[in-house]
Length: 295
Ligand SMILES: Cc1cc2nc3c(=O)[nH]c(=O)nc-3n(C[C@H](O)[C@H](O)[C@H](O)COP(=O)(O)O)c2cc1C
Ligand code: SF4
Ligand code: SF4
Image 1 (spheres, protein in one colour):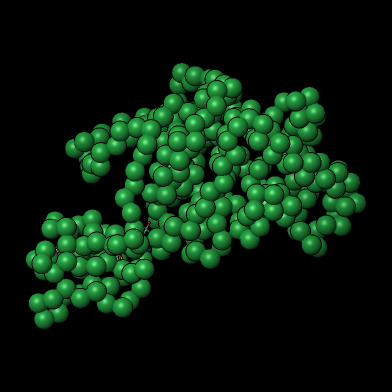
Image 2: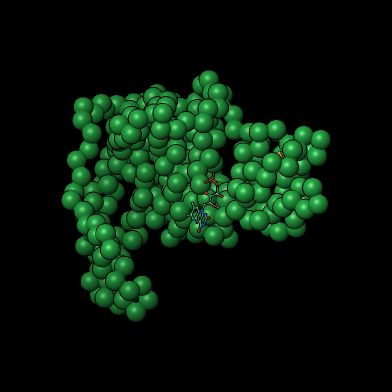
C-alpha cells in the first residue's frame, strides 16, 4: 500500500499550497512538477485538505470519516460560525455521569463514538489506538467483578504495614500512597460489589477500553485525547460517560485482566463507562483556583 499521497498531474496546477503546508517536507516543486519525495510521510492529509483542485489522493492508506446514527456533512468552522461562548458551553456541558439508566447502548452508537475518537490528534499522527468494547450490563458486571478481585488482593497487601514499608525499595511509595488515598474507597466498593452494586462502572451498560502498543511517539496522550472525543460526542448523542481510572490502573497492573481482553502486549490508556444518563445537571462545574505565571 502506498503510504504517501498520489498526485493527479492532470489536476495539479502547481499552486504550491500542499508544499507549504506539509510538515515533513515530503512535497516539492521541481522543474514544473510536483514531486512526492521519499521522506517519511506521516499521512496527516494536510496536503489533501488544502488542495483546491482535488489533485491529491491516498488510495487505501486513508479513508473518510463516516457516521451511521446521525446526519453528518463536513463543514470547516471558524470564529465567524461559532462563538467562544458557544464553545465553552459545548465543552462545559459534558459532565462525568455516575448514574445510568438500564437502557442498553446500540453497537452502532459505540461505533460512531469510536469513529469520532480517531479524529483526535496523535503524536506524529501515528493513530495507534485500539478499542475493546464490552456492551451489555452482564459483560460489564462480570468485568467489574474481575477488577474487584484484583483490588481485593491489592487491598490485602496495602493493609499490612510491614508489606507497605517493605515494598518501598521495589515500588517507591506507591503502596503507601495507595493505602493513604484509595484503600478505604476501594474497601467500600468491594463490600458494595458483594451486595450487587457496581461502584466501579456506576452501573453503566457499556464500557469502551482504549489501548495501544507503546511504539507510537505519545501513546498515552493520544489515547487520552481519543477518550475525550468520545466523552464529548456521547454527551451530544444523549449519552453520559465517565472515565474510570481505577479500571485503567487495574488493567495495567494485572496481566490476567489484560489477557482476558486479549490485549496482553498493550498499555491501557482509558476506560470509559457509557450509558443513558440518569442525572441532569443544572449548572456548570465550579473549579479550584490555579497557578499561572507569565514569564
Ligand atoms: C501528544 C502530541 C504531541 C504532538 N507533538 C507535535 C510536535 O512536537 N510537533 C508538531 O509539529 N506536531 C505535533 N503534534 C501534532 C500531530 O502531529 C498532529 O496531531 C497529527 O499530525 C494530526 O494532524 P491534525 O492534528 O491536523 O489532525 C502532536 C500531537 C499530539 C497529540
Ligand atoms: S495543492 Fe493541489 S494543485 Fe496545488 S500544488 Fe498541491 S496538488 Fe497541486
Ligand atoms: S500527508 Fe502530510 S506529511 Fe504526507 S505529504 Fe501530505 S502533508 Fe506531507
